[in-house]
Structures are given as C-alpha cells and as structure tokens.
Length: 199
Image 1 (tube, rainbow, N blue to C red):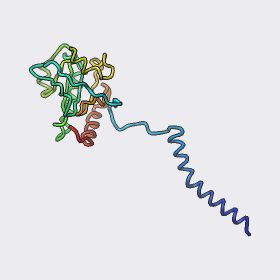
Image 2: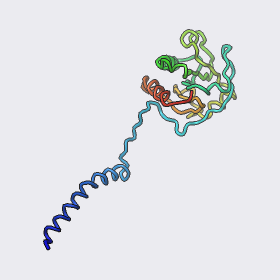
Image 3: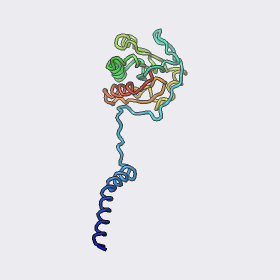
C-alpha cells in the first residue's frame, strides 16, 4: 500500500476544504464576531424608531381654516413647528417644504404641508403670498400640547427648527435637523411614495 501517496491525497483534500470554507468563516467572524457591519442608511432624515402614532385632536382655526382631528391622516404630511412670526429658519423650512412638494410632480397630491404654530400667530400676508395651501394649526393651547406630546424633545420642539415627516396613518416617522441636506427630504419622500400603498 502506498501510504505517502494516500497521505498526500488526504492533505490535498483538506487544503481544498480549507480554501473553500476559510473565506466563509472569516466573513462570518467579521460580520458577527467583530460586528464590522455597514451601519449607514440610505435615508437622509433621522428615523424615529419606533414610529409614534400622533393623537387625533382638532386645533383652533386660523384665518378661517380648520384643522380637523384627522388632519394628519390620509396623506403624507411634511410638518414644521415654530413661531407664527416666522423667522429666517421658519421661512427656509416652509420654502423647502413647498419646493419639495412641487418637485414630486404627479405625486404632489399625496403630500400636504403643515405649519404647527406655537405663538405670535401669524404673518398672514407672508403665508398667503408665499405658501398658498399650507395647512395651519395653533398649538399654544391644551389640544395643541396633546398633539405635540409625542414629538421628540417635546418642550423644545417649537424652537429646534426641525421638519418632520408623518405617514398617512398619522405615524411620526422622520425628522430633519436644520443642517440636513436640502435635497434629502425630496429623495426620502420619493422613495417612500414609490414603496407606499397608502396615502
């Protein structure tokens, strides 16, 4: 019996097995053992995880416009919270919201813009001239505070200059800080509208 040839044959088999399984074992170790995973995401806003369902509350009317209890249901809502005097950040945010909706083209009817006003309501001449169709709701009242409660950083929400995204079921799901890329809101919304069968 040729034992050296048999040993050589076994050795070659183990080399082949090792060559096949070594990369798999290394990948498994890196991915799970050392937790070297891609942590980036494709969205530009910050996900609110888990999404928070907003309460259904009617808000006091502004300029003969009603804010019904189900105002944040049925459509995707881009929401800004801030003072009604509308400072520079407020104007930037409302303009971004308007331009983002217009850029959606045929899908723009699935999206509404909402300004939740925390006080000093309102620079109506500016809003009428620049933001026709903007849904307004006052939150400087008990009903408004109930609506505001689920938002992140509730007590500061009206001063942070954030834009929020609410899905057609009334779930608060994303927030955009003032420094977020301006095209990020549009990119995220296009993706959500493409994938969504609601609203």
